[in-house]
Image 1 (cartoon, helix red, strand yellow):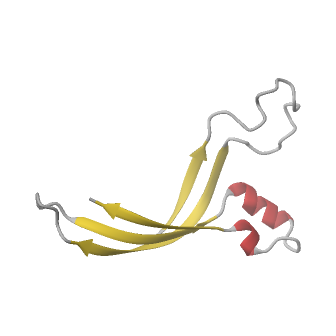
Image 2 (cartoon, rainbow, N blue to C red):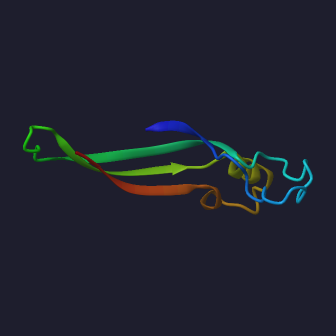
Image 3 (cartoon, rainbow, N blue to C red):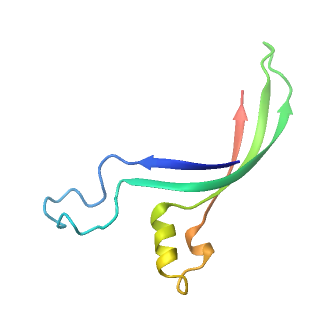
Length: 96
């Protein structure tokens, strides 16, 4: 799978104290991230349930990054490696 994602978090870190940071303190959005991802999944069919529903057990991975990591990498090629900006997610999914 190849794709992208969008993430929005309502409220921002350090917004509890009014005036703690000037409006232009962060040059990037603190609540929105977008980025590319690459992943795959392999599944195994389990025995059907008593009422005939199909069940599957899947293992998956996703390798991704985000806009802030990619910009930081492009501006600092000698200081950052791909391992510094990539995030690996592993998981299991059970459909029942």
